Length: 264
Image 1 (cartoon, rainbow, N blue to C red):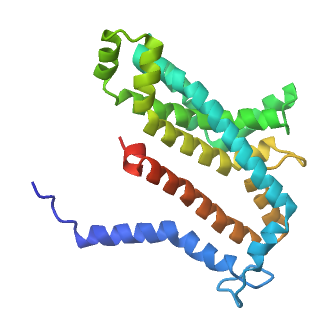
Image 2: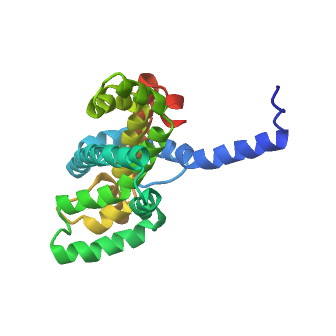
């Protein structure tokens, strides 16, 4: 059965929506190659000086490395927690599984600024404010619901008959999980890991509440830079972050395929 043709009005609306979403990128990219001292659009001169300035800014480089390490650590812990939790909720289906899932994903319903303020009050009382463990826990709280939801969805779409066949042939439950379930979950694990890393790396509101003068992620450092200066350095960093995100997407696409990884 042939699909009905898309109307010109719908195509025009989609083009306007894409243009609206891409408008910031279309402005930021030319700004990053500006040779001006102050940010202005369109640039009066062109230069790559601000990309070179990134390498000469130790605060930005240190914040970038810290953000990568933080996001990688949060992703590893998220997967270690979400995989067994998702398996227990989906495969074992205990009483109250839906209520527990709603509880675990509750941080997604709260505005980030409200969540950050609550963590600020609690962490200040227990001495975790402006510390690496405190920032790690804050990122873990905000990213774990994404990972849990993606892995649970991926696990619920897997054919349970394959696992039952392996168990019928004498495989122990641990062997079934390791040799059958886990390989079939690989696309979901990659999707969850990539999403966790990007959300943690890009998180700015919670990081503003949890960080301190000696502890700063790259988004927070960029925010403080914009507060005190109006040069195109942040535009250059933003372009590199877009390229960095695209690189992660391309790696996922080349290894497993985006349709297989993100679409169920």
